[in-house]
Amino acid sequence: MNPAPRSEVSRSRIATASCIGTAIEFYDFYIYGTATALVFGKVFFPTVSETAGVLASLGSFAVGFVARPVGAVLFGHWGDRIGRKSMLVVSLLMMGLSTVAVGLVPGYSAIGIWAPVLLVVLRCVQGIGLGGEWGGAVLLSTEYAPPGKRGLYSAFPQLGPALGFILGNGFFLVLSSVMPAGDFVSYGWRIPFLFSSVLLVVGFYIRMKIAETPVFQAAVDRTERAKVPLFELLRRQPRVLLLSTLSFVLAHALFYTVTTFCLSLGTSSLGIERTTLLVGLLVAAFVMGVGTLVFAVRSDGWGRRRLSAAAAVCVIVWAFPLFALLDTRNPVLLTLGFTGGLLCFAMLYGPMGAYLPELFRVRYRYSGASLAYSASGIVGGGVVPLIATSLWASTHSTVPVCLVLMGLGVVSLLCVLALPETRDHDFTDGLHTGGTGADTAQAARTAG
Image (cartoon, rainbow, N blue to C red; front, side, top):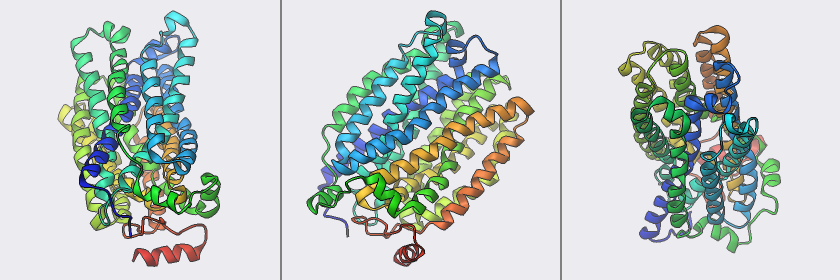
């Protein structure tokens, strides 16, 4: 049984803090991805070919995903040792300040090789900050949730990506529409990064007003804190960590294939207007946000495992239609392709906010959830767009990219089916699984 939850006012404040916080952090992360697809090749890698510039830009984008597990380990350790709230404030500051700094980095024409070097360094800081953000935000919501409503409460931080993406891409859409192309490449792209300073102040104020979660506070009162959470996680639940990480590689891969690779492919190779693509992505992101909320809430009734498995199957089915619709260059049809892809993402991402925390014990829950989420992002968000771009450059066909997505869908499906259902588990101790078959069988029996 969960500890007695705090007042309804506190729950409203927690929902607001977790949603706005993740929206700001993902806004910071996504505007980098959009700028990567649209201008970074010209601004920071102008001495190479267009394809090489795109690959170099995506490489700097991928650095953020490689840095995420570092943030997951660091923030997870201290989040499991001293609490969720303080780590969420630090992660917000790291993301916000590094994002503003990206908007101030001079281009290659001004400082030469130091421009991409500074870009990569700041991208690392972004990745470390986001590595600690997501796990802390979902714990903030789920550890406040009353019994039977963890899916509902986890939906608040899970809406952050949709809100952040809509805000960031909407910003780029307006700027690219009202500014001459030369001005946009010269300085217009910097405005969304500098605007992050305003969001940072808002997010910092909100996060400073929240209290520690009752589940973690109860663990503190019982002196049940791990000395080195990561070591205990790896010793007690290595199998769950591996399976949960592999299960959600697909979510990152699908999202960034649609929002970054397809945007880059459409503008650079298919000759589609940038405005057309951005509008299509904004429509798809809105549907994704609604879908994320619906699927997160429904996971309380249908189960996390069932919805996650269904999402993997949907991705396998939708991989070829996604690119076939994009290849038509028709605004309505490509929007339909994007919407279908991001709706599949929402079906997997919605339940994930409650599923990953439920898989791990409270003693190292921050570490486990953050590390699984961040490690899955290395392959799904960092490597897959690079592979997709390379495959397109060498074959001029999207068929290999479709096959990659389908393969990841199969891996995700098999791994999800190997995990237990968790919606009815006692959240004060988390899921009592580790590396042994007996533990897994016990967990399965408990899940019912």
